[in-house]
Structure formats: C-alpha cells, structure tokens
View (cartoon, rainbow, N blue to C red):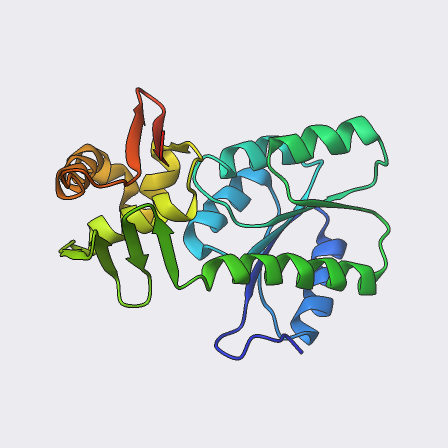
Length: 232
C-alpha cells in the first residue's frame, strides 16, 4: 500500500492511449494512490493546475502538444516530480526531455514493479523536501511549522501571503522563479487576477526584511521574468 499515513498521494497520468490509462490506473489504485487522468497535453496542463498532484506520469508523444512542451510549460510554475513514458530508447530524446525539467524516464513496455519503485523513490524525495521544518540563511530563520520569520533574534510579523511567498523563495533558494510559477503556487485558480498584487507583496517583504547590519538573503528581480532569493 501507499506508505503515506496522512492522505492518499495524488498522481496525474497524461497519455492519449486509453488502454494504457486504464492499466496504469488499475496498478496505481491498487497501491492506494488517488488517480487523475488526461488524454492530451493541454488537458493535462489544466488538470495539473486543478489537482496540484504529488507526481505526474507523462507520455512523450501526444496528438496536440508534445510531452516535452508540457514539461516546459509545467516548469514555469510547478516543481512536481515528472516521470516520462516513451516507446523510444533514443538517448538524445531522453536528454532533451530531462533537460526540459522531467525527473525520470521509463521506456515502454515497462515492468510494473520497476514503475512502482521509481514512483516511490520520486515521492520520497519530494516528501523529504516538503517536510523540512526550518530554514536558516545567515541571520534569517524561517519556521515553516510555526509560520514565523526571525532576523537577528527579532520576530518579523508577516501576513499569510507574505509568508507563503518567502517560504516558496526559500525552498527554491538560488533558483529563478518565473512570475507564472509564483502566481500559480500562491494563488492557484485566482492567479490571473492576482498579477498586479505580486509586485506589491514582494516590495512589502523586502521592506520588512530590511534590518540594519543583518546578513540575510535578498529577493532579486529579473525584469519581465521573475524573482529569486540569493545571498549575492
């Protein structure tokens, strides 16, 4: 059974082969996973926004947009683990897809036990990242469980949205996060209507994090692209 004791882990399968969708669904439901399905790339992207799955299984070849294009689009706003499926063993094809942001690759036909082992490994890695309870960066400390920010032993009050933003930045320290990804992660379905708020919240965070002589990370702006948290 699925090792999670808190809730079923959600897996989104994006594949245009009805038979494969059915077989994968049976295999994974038997292991206790909650399964969501999409039979095209564009539908898969919509489902990823709606469901926010713990893992995505994605076919490389589909009738509307390619799996590589789906990966590129997903990586603009999501770090959900992605396991690619393909009937091709071309190393170049695998490298291209992995470079686009996929986490692993398995070739059809595959052994169900190998598939399940890869899924468990990917979910374990992702769970470990989510379960981090604190982050210390110089004189700055974030407590994810208590939702508190401390700089040089001084408590800095943050709104729920401000903390969610800083948590997202800290868990992706040094990585450039696009506006699209930040909006989807923080506001989800309301992302499009919240675009004008992002700059305001980032400015508020910067103001609250300005403590004289403190060694703390900075929120760097990349115009027209996004933001990243860095000690530079």
